Image (cartoon, rainbow, N blue to C red; front, top):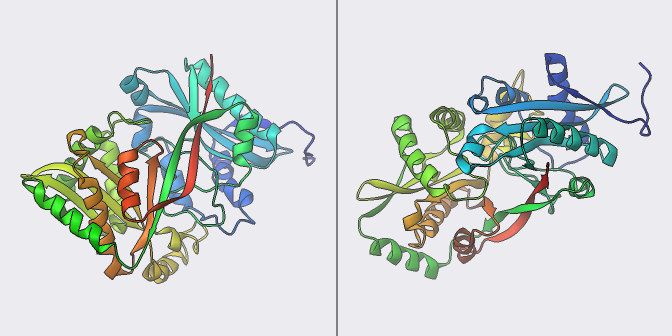
Length: 381
């Protein structure tokens, strides 16, 4: 086959055979080959999420596309119709995700147009993205990173070249919502804040905050699900978690979860809030180049002992408890538990730009926004 040139129009093909899926999964190793901040995911984990047997696909239709120029992969995208999202929101919104592309507007345009046409054919009137693949089943966080490209992402957070925003905006996609990552780092939280939050916790009758019992994972997951679907019901981008999805997520996260950072807030024994922080396993993954075998297991065992930061992965309260300060108390407990474990710094992400309750709670603890991710949107009709 004769090699193509940048002047040749890219050819976009649907990925429906293993050979193309392998190239789809491997493309980021080309895009990021000179980027020291990129953290290679485990290829087996990527393949597992993309496989139709994953519970996300029970309520979603997904098509994967690969852009080729002269037979060489130069970009990729997924087009997604999340039927559960549209039923819940009474909408006709399509999504794009897993976007990777060389710095070439022609390739980006071909990918975005192909995905838009696929969504339009299925009755969608608008599109948002990137979502990877939803706000619940994440290979990485939604949105395009806009800043701080020189710092590696934490676990399950996204990273991309600095030119991605220009590719979207140059093709007419506009801002839908910004998602924020907060950084916290200190030897100890301010004593005045600790005293204030302790008083606050004592003032809420019947409030207890406890670590989750991972030996009774099924029971604890049910309590988390109760809070999750109530806490995020009115949030932008929310889609209810199915039983299959939350069970799958719990099994995936259990090997790296630490009960000191998995907290439940209960009032008279009833769950009202929860928080989960995870050690930053990306500090391990960056040494494994996407492979667990043959030597990745030994690297994992070696480097996981050197993890020195964590990510507050999720935190939620039932709506009637949002102005009680319980959210700040959960953040504080995770922070306090992390300091003696050499995990007293890290990221809380992702936070909606207009979620002022969460933002103020983090800022009272000294947190500050250090990364911004933008979700883009476009009309399809």
